[in-house]
Image (cartoon, rainbow, N blue to C red; front, side, top):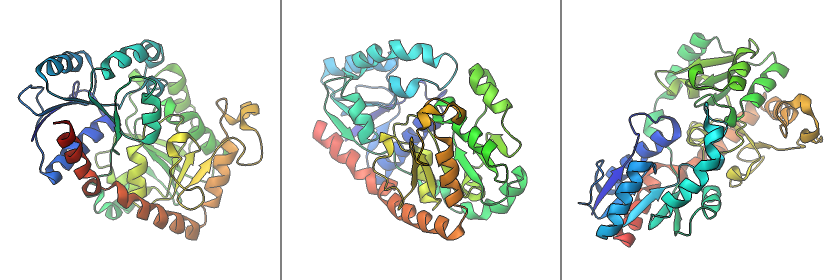
Length: 344
């Protein structure tokens, strides 16, 4: 079996989509699946990871030639907004474009059940859920970097942290406002901060962050983030799955997440702490001081306060580390072999 595994714009796209593509190719190696990264009809399956115009053209050619087409649904209009400059303006026309593009596939691969539910409103195409997975090898030995990265960014435990591009959609307002309310706790967001790509509101939030809230920018070894961080705080408003969350879980870090449908599979209180409107007994949507409409910063403060206790952090961290084993690449790899064999 030979797969054409095509990643349009691969030289420009970073973050979760690029990590997912890398994970897929590692899983192909684990499962013994032969693949090429070139878009070619000399393959049993054409798998497109980003349905740009070239991918659409190749998908149409493949269909005419009788080669099954698989499309990964990394991108949705819901996930596209509040990301980078101009993405809000592009989110509306993106939906009809994706409907046509995803409609060209014989099978859509969705990284989560939540993403599949969204995609069912885009195209009448069979779907298969396959997690992006977590690359445990990438995290190996992260503990050895703790002292170096704490010293580099002047962080004292317990440090609240997040990993990924600094964008509004991931809960930037909540992260910054929670840091404002907890001046005795260090907050660190590890990830690229290219302000030329950010909107005005994102830039303002970064510039007005309190002194205990650090934006590190790009880090040369992402293991350092998981070494220096103690509580993974992920107040994202919209996520297809969240590879950084899976990495934090694999590193045994207790996680605090916004109570959104994406994370419905996590057990609140046992595997994470979830914060939704009213965690502290109030209606966050009616409290503008909590940041963005619908935010519950007080709930995030309460959750992080609970995790000041080292024993509680260890308990949640151990539980979530055990749960993460199901997302290891070697636990997922055979799903691709089965899927391709079914289509081919």
